[in-house]
Length: 66
Image (cartoon, rainbow, N blue to C red; front, side, top):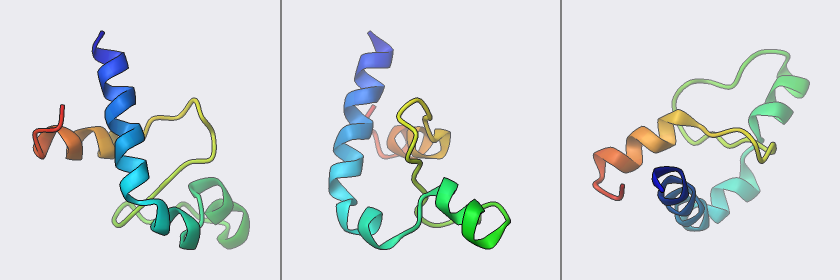
């Protein structure tokens, strides 16, 4: 049940940040282009559907959305 709630909250979070997804490289693309990991700060997203960015889950918990 908790996993479903987290998944729903992450979907809503991503909908709020649609613009940033359009103008920001995914973590995978960043690695291919710049040959180094994406910075740990700022907005990050993953193309892979099976990856959950734990920093987003922590941020949602801090905001009281989980």
